[in-house]
Image 1 (cartoon, rainbow, N blue to C red):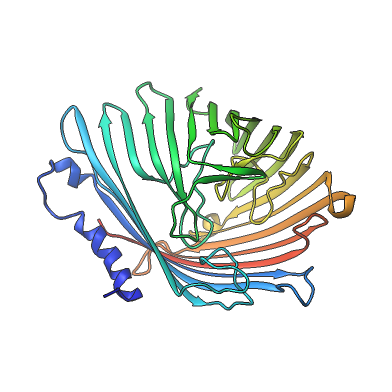
Image 2 (tube, rainbow, N blue to C red):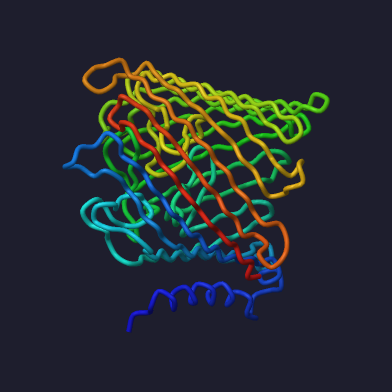
Length: 415
């Protein structure tokens, strides 16, 4: 007999708690283990302002997510072994055929989809010295590939990867991803990319970064290959410089992308430059960003991942062919004013230089307001509330949009 949604949620917590049970493993396997259960309540409303009466006028849904993440330590010995586990459950609280398609649930306009969906994955890991290898379910957070987590449940890849930190300051990563479970899906499918066609069952990646100058400077070199579609090189420089009460910083990234193998996505020749400069003092941080897309194509990146570019924001990514975009952003941390846990930012990005609808000169902009508060102590410690508001005006295919997201999350440490 199938479990009810409540029973499945309880099962997630039980799975995490079970990792604390005694076993034949050595003490480090248990002692270094950790597990959390995140309760994520997500409301999203996107007003599609440019639609006609025959089209969808808005997307509006409300859902509850349960996200369990558990990591064991390693057994003792020259080679230590361990296990990681992830389980996710999404429950539909409100939707309809006319308002579906926010990305919170596995549905689309005209079909509000199932009342619930769930997913489960795990990874076996091994450690030798300061090198760790993992095989199974992965959520990499690397400049060349970063698993997306901007909806109800996170994106999970299946594959293997190695991380090595044998040399002080130097971190090396490499691996291969074979399949992906997208954010609002229960299926593992081949890997695709945004702005380029085709699908592949192999994404190979390698690279690393080196920190020096007292940790203030980082250089990185990365390579990624979506086999038979495209390959991509990334060169990255990050520098942070304290000057008196100020902290100045810069993050420079350059991507070079070409078609690969059988060219299942067609011919591709693209380069992208991303510049992020910031200056912070006390509670305040001021940022300026610049992004330029060159070559013969739009910038390619794995579908639903978070590309390492400055103007990938709440709705737009400003990666169209020939697009140039500028960003201005202001952040404030209210801890300096006696309200720890309260942060906010406002951001404006404008882009142009691409082809708009009907051959018009392309122009678009997005304005974001983001306010979040996390309770710092007491019985509701770690309860967070976040409001994200965005406005888009564009003469490209996306048109004009207004959007609100309200996210309430509560993270429970299980061990």
